[in-house]
Amino acid sequence: MSWLKLYLFALLALSSSARAAGEINAADVSWMMVATTLVLFMTIPGIALFYAGMVRKKNVLSVVMQSFAICCAVTIVWYAVGYSLAFSGGNWFVGNFDNVFLKNIQIDTMHGSIPEMLFMMFQMTFAILTPALMCGAFAERIKFSALFLFMILWSLFCYAPVCHWVWADEGWLFKAGALDYAGGTVVHINAGVAGLIACIYLGKRIGYGKEVMAPHNLVLALTGACFLWIGWFGFNGGSGLAADSRSVMAIVVSQIAAAAAALTWMICEYIVNKRFTVLGAISGAVAGLVAITPASGFVTPAASLFIGCCGGLVCYFGATRLKYKLGYDDSLDAFCVHGVGGIVGALLTGVFASDMITGETMKPVAEQLWIQFESVIATFIYAAVVTYIFLKIVDLLIGLRVSAEEERVGLDLSLHGERLE
Image 1 (cartoon, rainbow, N blue to C red):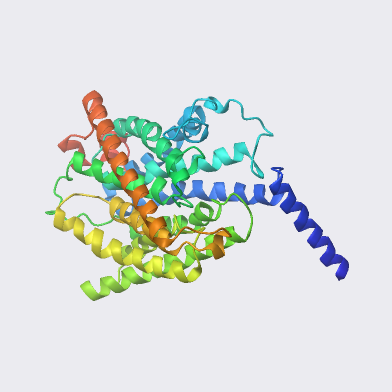
Image 2 (cartoon, rainbow, N blue to C red; image 1 turned 90 degrees about the horizontal axis):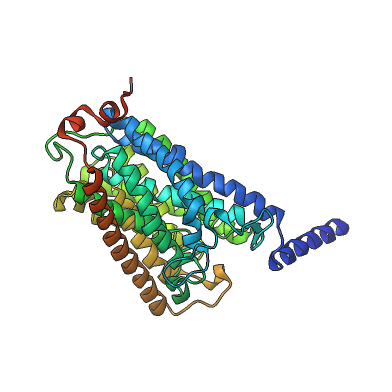
């Protein structure tokens, strides 16, 4: 037995030294390949099914097509120039062109203990997911051609720079000490704010507030939400780029926060409407996962319980219900859940980040909270301005919104010539 213990200790020591020396670590590579697959699974089929279940039957194929097309388009954009703009040298604002078309990245080029090709692929899945999330804000009324062009431009000029700010060594928010473990600012606030601007720019759906626009199939939405929940383990658990205890903790706190937020949302619904709904439960779970995302590698399970409850509470009362009072048509609550949930999570990360998890001395809470606030405001303003600019450009070039007749018929038939039987 002592020989076995000695062998295991030696194996652990070799693994740790390999990480420190920047050599390939088989455990890290294996986990990151799984995590990459899980994050891609969040978009296809996760978001695709989640949104497909929540729209009306005549628009189901259109939202599925949007997620699938974004996956294809952003893959090529990220390979060609997106990765380079996000992570290759550059300045405080954006990267340079050293890695366009993955130039200077060989099969054995390393990023820590994993190949850089794997890091690039993992980050690609984040770049794919972010614009796909945004589509929920303006579902059922945008031209497919306009969406396709807008998402390419947005990925290059909005997603890549914000990603560089937060996660690249040269980025100004990274240097300022902003904490975003897995994408509270880069993914959720970025996509949520862009979705809000887009849905206001496009205007309300025909009949909004006058006609019933109930979800087509809540079983489909529930299935998509479950796929998202499972995929989120790769999203948060993989963001440390290692198979270690911190990765495990990120998964644990993600599970707790999701469950806490779902229960909180359900309780709020019962207090207000005297009923529990499937749509409310899955919306709450996603809100909790969004809120814990920036904090997942920094907080304890106890903190994640509080963050999850706050995510569910604020997204229900402060966002989804406020939407109806303000009158904007966020079709599938993309801003209400991702934008607001991301803001809640980013700020609470500054409150609860613990050196017990990070192994590093953390800044005083007031100082860290101010840095988090700066990152939220900067992302909010930049995403809003850039989104508006490119919406305007695409609208002038080819038009953004489908005709009234196409919208009434449904986008499945009018844009794609197909229908769900």
